Amino acid sequence: MLRELYLDLRKGMFDGKINYIKAFMMLFDAAVFITVAIIILITYFTLSFFGIVKTTTITTIIMIIWAIGYLRFFIFFRMTDKRFRRFSHIFGRSGKLISKSDWLIIKKLYPSLYNALISKKSFGYCYFYSREIALIIPGLKLMYCTVGKGDKVTGHSVLVKNNMVFDTNCLQHFDFRDYAQSCNLKVYKIYSFGEYSQADFFDKIRPDFTKWCADNNAYCCPQ
Image (cartoon, rainbow, N blue to C red; front, side, top):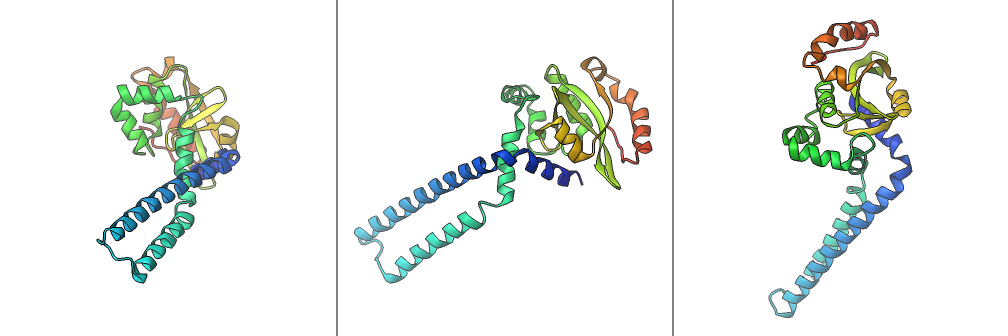
């Protein structure tokens, strides 16, 4: 359920950049295709010139089939939505809440945390990873809420600052209003550093937050 929400969010967030990203992908693939083709052709004709490989109709047909096959792969596979999502994931990771320099700090000083986030092992553990990031990067607030629609509503935790949201489940920045509308967001409470930095933070908020989620028909299992 959460994964479907994130796919819709990313699609909306990158509507204005789709053509730019796809153009970049096409140029990159075209460069790779041309480079590989030139190398293979030069190698083929060099070997043929020295008599190592004989230039025959069969070998020429094989070269043509290879070129067509690679071109088909280039057009029908490498331009899929899945690959576009990988690019959009990279483009959306850095933003107003967590900058590129912040990511470098996390990578250098907290490698285990960085690896867990980048490898998406953090998915489903929003309460823990949101707080871990908030304790490292100054100025972030921690928002407890529910997301989802119908019978698929769950408790959730995200980072907020300056009308922006960062979700550790998908490592994406979102406009607060867009996020709220797409996820059917209901806010429980937004915590400041002075609150979530306390060692017993989870123990303090768990009972009331769990009850609030139950009252709103939301699944909740805070760490």
